[in-house]
Image (cartoon, rainbow, N blue to C red):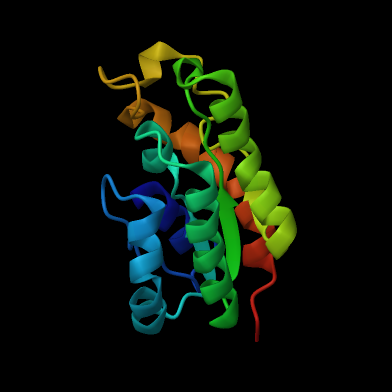
Length: 163
């Protein structure tokens, strides 16, 4: 988040970053909090990166999709553009679950006409040295690569700020 904030200050000073995330939160938690967060923060752009904890807990993909859809709809009704950030599950969750989980993000983006980053950890996920010992969370060294991934789909949204 700090790297994104620094970059926006340099390149798009009319934007600021507000981090409304809660570590370990599921999509249900995000859906429960979205109304008050939108009211309080009034974002022009919402970067929606939720669902990984649903997957790691083996929660139903359909429930995650329903929660993410509710967040997207609320954000769009509030006038925010949405960048949906996808994740993938490790293969030990089973091929059917992993495929269903990954496809959910593309399906939501298409259905709700949002921007999509298909996989937050693209180019990082196969480099164990860029992960903490839990093999789930990226290290500080990986953060510039994560930012690069986010900036690709975010840049066009930043260029279209409403006057």
